[in-house]
Amino acid sequence: MLQQDLHIHTTYSTWDSSVVPEQTIALVASLKHARIVGISDHLENLGDGVFERYVLEIRQAGLKVGVEVDGHAWVAEATGRDVDYYLFHCRDHDADYRSLDRLLATGKPVILAHPNTLYTNLNRVPGACLIEINNRYVWRTNWKHFYGPFKHCFNFVIGSDAHQPNWLGQAAAHFAADQLGIKEHLVF
Ligand SMILES: [Zn+2]
Ligand SMILES: [Zn+2]
Image (cartoon, rainbow, N blue to C red):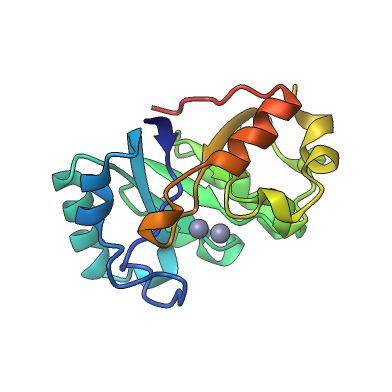
């Protein structure tokens, strides 16, 4: 069993074509692939009414409530939502770096989602942010080059970014973390 997986999508990510209809919160919860499991669907799919159902269903399943926030345009809405943690798409824009302070001010954990694919400049990221090594994307970039220089600057979180039940794994991300000498940070 994995220690932690806080990057998981479900059928609530209705605009995300990679999610299969079987990827329900109930199914993810039943698989018990990690000791700590959090659901992190896209905030833009969780409008009023939907968000309340989302939170209720996750809490009833005994999982952590996260959202994946797509840059600065969604930060005002994100800070008003009752979640346990944020995953944030931080592109290399001033407004996205400024958004990190607003998210951190909530006191909730802020995880930078797959920064290696978003060209996030980690030199501009506050040390209080958590940096994700993401099983879906880590192998698609030069991860040694991207993460290596920062391995002593941040705490790192490993996530599956699963959109389908068979994606609930972290083998590639753990391999990269081990090679880098990075120890996974447990958020909860
Ligand atoms: Zn993402
Ligand atoms: Zn995601």
